[in-house]
Image (cartoon, rainbow, N blue to C red; front, side):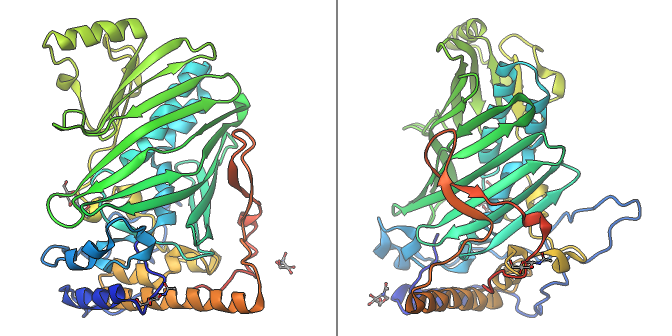
Length: 453
Ligand SMILES: *[C@@H]1O[C@H](CO)[C@@H](O)[C@H](O)[C@H]1NC(C)=O
Ligand SMILES: *[C@@H]1O[C@H](CO)[C@@H](O)[C@H](O)[C@H]1NC(C)=O
Ligand SMILES: *[C@@H]1O[C@H](CO)[C@@H](O)[C@H](O)[C@H]1NC(C)=O
């Protein structure tokens, strides 16, 4: 991420200056732990908050170009960025946004045909990157040993993640369906590069989905994400690269090509691809935009559809919608055999969806059940969420210094860092290095968790 490991460097000094220039309302006191403490509804249904406690401050009116022009081509972990570029979430919470469209996994579990299941899994993989649309705030770098859990009984899953390495940054996650229908896990090594006007994030690491009733495992990696105009101009996000989703039991494969924007922007946000069986026979064509929705149909109809489009018709523009598609879109129209649509664009601060808004909520009684490493307890993120930017900056610096100090101590004692909930191993399906869940988190014995805040 943007955070520096060297607080004595000149970038940090610049950071102080820039932070000082941001006009923030510091009259609000620190209310860590009090926000969001409201009783559950009487009917026992958990209500999630629908807005953040404090308004977002603006990032305009200050130029960080003077800091950044020295850093072109550097890895971002070597640069300290002003906190104004952040959003009040940890990267561990951002990963959890995968689960916003978990209904697609439940759907895949219920489907009887491998082609149908692959369609749902492909939609899920694309939906995960859709949440990044218009999200230009940078999440906080997780501290080593930081964890995040999310239990959503209403959505039928629980999720746990841990920062298992600081250099390079690696986040491991594990999720399971509450009705034992799926497992979803992986490790993410975002490699960030700063290219002067843009920041590129190459998400290494494998993602694995297991549909238990079908005894099936799917694996894939995410496309590369690029945030343009980080310094001046209109920010926009591009995703590019090829995502291959493999069903390791049946040999079905889904290839999705996230197109780079191209010279005239014609290809912006476009995704095209297909599903093939183990004999490489194309069964299904997929097209659309990751920001809007995906359509799909059989290869013959797809050819006809392309021809119609080349003749000047605009068959897809007419019907492109944002918002979830009705469940029965299947076969509704020629050329539109199957679809998935992103949820409506949120008008929330930081461009959060309502799912995202709830992620850092510290609901009543939660503090007693969380481990001390949970990101909801991070004072810098909480400070920013509450609109107290000075506190957030101070706390961020304090936490990073504490982390450095702990590392120096370990070096002195020649002690290795021990991860708590995940261990390094090999992905059984791809044979590549991965971090595997050690189990027992939800037993909630947090007696030997490290003190990282
Ligand atoms: C920290 O920053 C100082 C000053 O910029 C530099 O001399 C030093 O090499 C840096 N140390 C590390 C570990 O990066
Ligand atoms: C939110 O989206 C709007 C509209 O595209 C964009 O102008 C703005 O920069 C985004 N804000 C953040 C914090 O990403
Ligand atoms: C919790 O874990 C600690 C250390 O791992 C262990 O000593 C202790 O017995 C455990 N407590 C319970 C109630 O299982």
